[in-house]
Image (tube, protein in one colour):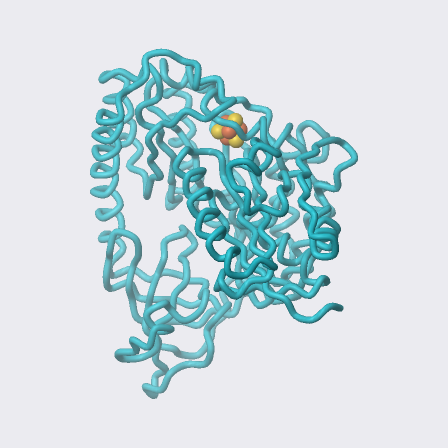
Length: 469
Ligand code: SF4
């Protein structure tokens, strides 16, 4: 193995990119690269880009601008760019960012170690945005970087066949492709052995998992993962509403490790806009699935994505979106202003909505949602949440220690819970990282809940050792 070298990864975009960044770190580990939080200290900087929104792309280029400055001082630094912008732009990106040594596409991650080794020895520039059957897209090394994590992402499929008109994913990530169920289960068993307690299954549309290949239904995959001993929780994202099956809804009722949270992106409450987006469901069909989900799992938390200002979205269409938000009462929402993406069909649509109008609509959606989020959080005061502890809270790490130790984790419905913990004898409890604990909820904020935990004797709930509050 070479001497220790430092790798800084800037991850922009979705969980798929977070997962890819972990994979990149794992793959580069044998070349001697260890992750650092400081770009100025890095021998290799990887910018893992996102092309889904203009803002995300701008963020990548502005970071590359800062890296160019660093490289002027340390010319030996290698700068690589990957992800969806790299796939989309290919070698053109070298003109926009001349500081780059390496451009690699979404299907080239498996070949990254070879490319980095070549750049290191020959100081050449490489562009690899090849896609095709021969590409080792599903080479998923385990271990190495990220050891000790409580939660991990596991990609179960890549690409997308849906072609929503605003989205570039099918063009930059290619057609949908699912991994074999036994491979996925094996990966999860390995993660559990290394201490992971929770997995989030990733795919652009997990609801159509395995359909093309004829592996098994997504609900069956979940049942197999539910049987992995030692695993405490299963999550997944993202779910296309048109493919949300009855089997998957009942899985929320039947599988004890499947968390009571679903991210179900609606995008708009107007049938006319949904049609222009090529989402292939109606508002009524979406609402009916929400109702059936809540019948299967009454405590399910539902979150969603909304795009405001899609071309042709009139006042009435926008009002229909607000009305849908009022009807569903989401737990939280991600809302975005529509922006043209090169190569996406909607970029050629007429009837653009003005930027001022988009900003106004975005504010209205966020204000409306905030009232529901706060109301839902406040309703949890006085209840007890089962929290999987990620580790000491940021405040604790920053030395703000008040009474007891501050911990942070997530409840099963994905809400962030920060809490203090003391044993009955008023001494701090042992390291709670990776444990499931019961926390009395005492405070509610917009983005988190606060509470207290008094550590008593651990009890067993569903075979799981739980530290009771
Ligand atoms: S389902 Fe639509 S929005 Fe999601 S990745 Fe596929 S094309 Fe993009």
